Image (tube, rainbow, N blue to C red; front, side):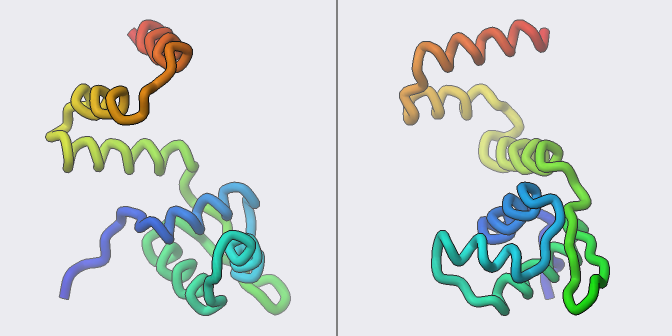
Length: 124
């Protein structure tokens, strides 16, 4: 049997975004936010949040009749790790081809390019 991946799936990331926004949330809280966007089963949200706890992204505590979950990792840290994993897997660790592809496909505005350039200079 394959070990469970620590990388977030699309659905897990969607749930994490809700929890990061709410800071603490019950399964019902997350379910109601997601239900406004699309049809989803309550049990699916519960299962996914349990998986996120197993992966170490959420921590729960008992509160009256429901568990209250909170994120254990900062959103910026998780996104950084996901981007690094993607760049490593798809572009052999080089961000340059990714940036070229984004510029070609997304038609990044002059304003965005100027901001990216400013941030690169700042980082140097």
